[in-house]
Length: 138
Image (cartoon, rainbow, N blue to C red; front, side):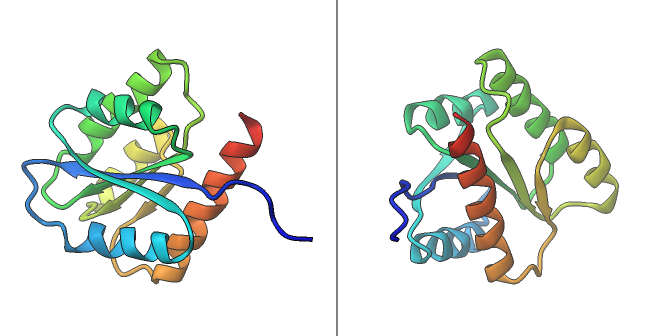
């Protein structure tokens, strides 16, 4: 029997001041090739991420960090998700993540952290699994 569930909707985002975009573009293409709908944005304020996520009715948020600030920015995004009453929307973080930032990111509720070098198949499978689990509970 064919799967009639809607394809996962993904928001991928990075700060507008971060000019490094090759990795996030590669992830976006891999997710698209796996039949996911992908919204790709640069944000000015962390709250912008949540606004777009709600407007686009996404099932997961992927944050890319290549220039630092990952813990503080992610904390603000998760706090905004809670404030807007969508605390279960999965957040995945990737990029240049220092080892000592992993624990604070996990503590705030990040579902997966990709520190670079992860096979695209693993990234795609993780996004698909988390997005479908979220969609099945909303």
